[in-house]
Image (cartoon, rainbow, N blue to C red):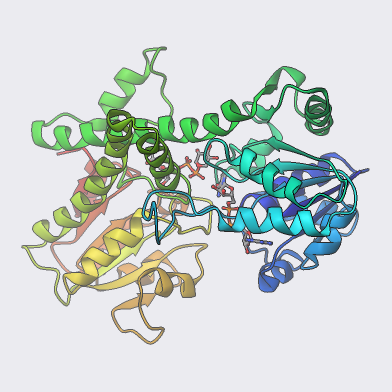
Length: 454
Ligand code: NAD
Ligand code: UDX
């Protein structure tokens, strides 16, 4: 069997590496129009940082895992084609700012329709609005030529930073198909691929629309939990309660559960905001105004949370950060990834730059060029300095803003006492991830602030 995956990004690369690792007899080819990305997948420095990814890629690369820019050949040779291209929020025209931009998906469908000479199973791996499969199938079928295409939905639930573990041991694999015999046969073919390593009871099959909608719903529910606890963090700061204690207390209720209740500077990442806005757009499209407003408030609360931290920093630093050096610990949207898409750090840094601060930024994995790009700065800008470690960043700074929860920034891994001696006084510490014990930081000499803590 031959598998082709169109899109060698954060999803396409890791998922295909896992399939290739687990199914030695299946040839897996990951293709992309971005030649630099493909070259990086073939090198020692992969374009995506994920713990365990390089090892998995190395195990399969050249054996049954290949990376290529020759999209046409890979399509033609494949039995199953995964579409794993980006589906960002539309920035223009109808639905701008909310709807998913499906132009990349449509391009894939047209290319497959033009190039394929034999029957194919097309798998939507990208996150898509409900009923996209219908459009994909119509485009594929419109070209005729006597080939048959089965379109399945197989959304990906991996989280960045834990992608390889998630793929190894998923909570579930979801496959959506149509009721007819041919579609069910295609569903079974895909089930059989995953069944090589995923227990059968975790592979669930549904109709196409349930599968597409389950992905958006899962992300909306996860993000909603974070916005809910973040809303309570503001109340904690006003009342003297401690958000971590509240989260722990409510999380012990088995109906609530303890996961995804960590209050923070706000959720980031390429998925949550985009997928909720997509859901909001869908609800509005179907005239469900109240439902749309309900989900949109999750994003509104997240924006409020990001701004709250920047405001707090300015107000604590005697209402001005102008010309003050502020050390930024972490720029990725969460630990163990080099991904900065929608990172809360971008928003906090932009706010501080607007206030005239000079930022000294350190992130263990993010490419410095990416930071300049995300902040909209020229490479020679003196407004920021990219540092090689947290010590360099904090030297001479008035404040530290810890924005990503990298293990390296834990008190057992960073000598905060040493750092404090080399800072301006009072030395401020803003923990946007509640990673440290604020009392310990105070004992060291910091004026410390956390999220949802007085
Ligand atoms: P990404 O931007 O990292 O990768 C997408 C890749 O597709 C890019 O390298 C781009 O060059 C390539 N591409 C676009 N059009 C192409 C074409 N016509 N032919 C060949 N290559 C093309 O995106 P991602 O983070 O991997 O996300 C992909 C999809 O998976 C999105 O729909 C996203 O919502 C979904 N998803 C992402 C995650 C995640 O954690 N990042 C998790 C679950 C689902
Ligand atoms: C998310 C979903 O978890 C995953 O299932 C889906 O496939 C893609 O979108 P991802 O965005 O990679 O994954 O990471 P996730 O762990 O969900 O974190 C998203 C953001 O929420 C991060 O900024 C993280 O720091 C933040 N977060 C997460 C919190 O602030 N508190 C929490 O309790 C959990």
